[in-house]
Image (cartoon, rainbow over all chains, first blue to last red; front, top):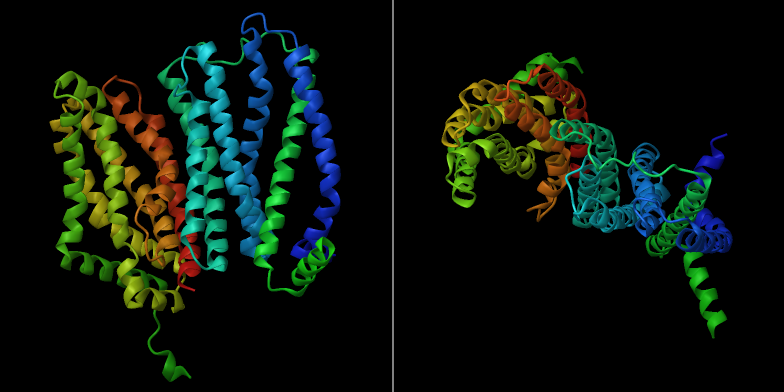
Length: 251
Length: 232
């Protein structure tokens, strides 16, 4: 019964399967992204308090929610790498780290752009912002460790371990930052709670955008993992055949 | 076969021997012992020079300054933890020994804390005085450092173990370890700042104690796994 699981770990199998999935994913993402962006930018009513500024939420919230999913993903891949020594899990983890760091950076940047008109400042040591920043640092640490270790096998296991340690730490950091901040200053204008009534005309496009950006993340991850597979498996026969077939087709 | 086995070595004997060995080595290398302390002293003295010599302002930043400097000093002293053992091959022997690696790593971490963490705790009141920390916060400062610096050593040990085989480590250790230490810094510095406000500190100590218990039970396991990865 474990056969499917280990087949899942075969880079060749993943490469072929993801190649068949990719066009569909791209089509779905394009459709959802177009609907979501047009709806959010043109048809959602402006907020009675925040005006048109509210529209940045449709980028900020999806990006932030995905960047939070990145560390659990890397930790799960890390456990699989450490326990079953599955090469594919490490390739996914390796590619997820920079993408996750970018998503975190975009979430911080869009948050700053949103915060400027609403809070009157680009940056505040708010609990959520701070824990996002620390998560960014943790991801940078994993990426730095990966690039510092030369042997790919040792790098895989070292980064897997660091991801697991980091993932255990993420909730601790989150709660300690919240505890620190809420004692520092009472929840003032930084709360999201005072948004306008959250009707379906607001949240339906948000849900569409979340799905669209999730698909974008998955597609980026798949594309980057496919490149990683080709680079690491360049000596295996199926990659050599693939490249040869590609060349004859081109000529 | 029994002749080869030799006298029975219990885990406790091995633990004590490792601890003793590391302490003896540390005592023979006075510079390694003193440098982190001097670093701690110098970093703390930079703050009045860089920020202001105004007593009121210094009082306000004293708790955070001492805590951040202690964090940096402990980061600096981490390098001694496995490096020499890695270079002379005794780390490999430790990994090959039949003793549970958890206790061996724990012994090394405790030895490291005794020579680098404990002196920082003891020196802290002097530096706190130089920064005009209110008198009623002294005990809190020492107690939080006493609970917090072992956590720094234990977390740091994971980072050192991961990077011990690398030729050029430099700053990578700090980049890996510093984000992990954020909770300790937040709780410790906050407790000291709250002490002079008359806030009840039971929760602060409880949280630090919880972090210490968690890292005592889990961090050596992670360090052991990391050493196995690095040494191969």
